[in-house]
Length: 455
Image (cartoon, rainbow, N blue to C red; front, side, top):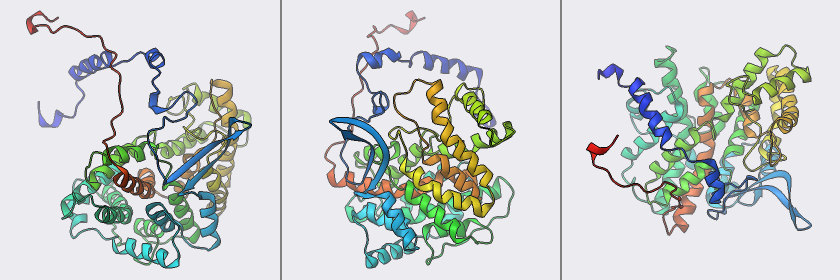
């Protein structure tokens, strides 16, 4: 096969793929017969208990008269209500992500001295090894920033003289460095893509020690390095709300699973990145923005509820947008009545909408948030309530910040690396066994046949 054709999908591969499909399909009723919780969740969305954590807690129900009933969602970082955390740093007019990093990593809210310490450490670790940008990021730039981020993380292993040391002090050092470097790698990877794949000017701004994580993202990304205070505050809030979400979310669970094998930090975090890249996990906010773009192109009046309702019904019937049958940004595996992250976001999103002159779009988002649960309830058999999740508004925020959509999921990773790091250390402190769940084989046994006798 010629070198230029090795990436082609040939008729031979299509035929072989059908063989894979035939011999890998498991009948759905078998999951019910053997009481297997698909996705490690029961029919009501409750997760199978697979471990214990002290890092964060998600609450979506409360016990009333001995019965569990849905309630407005709550999210706690190390026992502290995330809504109180947001109120605290907004009241003090400071940035919150670095405070949350300290809380998740070390188990308590930092005092002023500790807050200064974590900011100093992140600032010191915010510089890549010599020539790393030239030799790794600018060579063979990827069209996908999550892959570029994962490649860079794995390559950092080669620069670390103690890469395989899994002692807690060394892992802590590695995690803090990755938390500091994720924004730099993500932005530089985008700049490389923008230059080599889109023929735009190559602009590389060095991170500034006196700026927060959110400010540095905007400083490094924009050609003129300028941003408003509200823009930086909204991006900071997004990082806070995405920093952690319980040990059972797919990427954090991946971190626990891979860490339990005894592997190095770079491999564990690269595995988590691979999980987050998936559109069912970290890529959903891009889908929300694209869905609204399609909606705006196909409805004539943003304020006509009947027209909007009709479009939402078409989405569910697979007749609009990507024909997936989904209304992106609506519903969550755990929350039913409300997602606290979306609740916190909404008020501040409105302020940014006013600053950017995009209130018409904000009102459309608000209408869809109100109408979508009604349409879903009419069209689908559902076992719990449906509400807007954090992806519903985060993509809109990123578009108002003029962030390229290729950075939407990396920004999620820039935030969630804080939670992954905490989970990695928690697994190392408590680990005794490799995580290995059971899978039941449902294939009949068949006799071996000589090759000459096979069809």
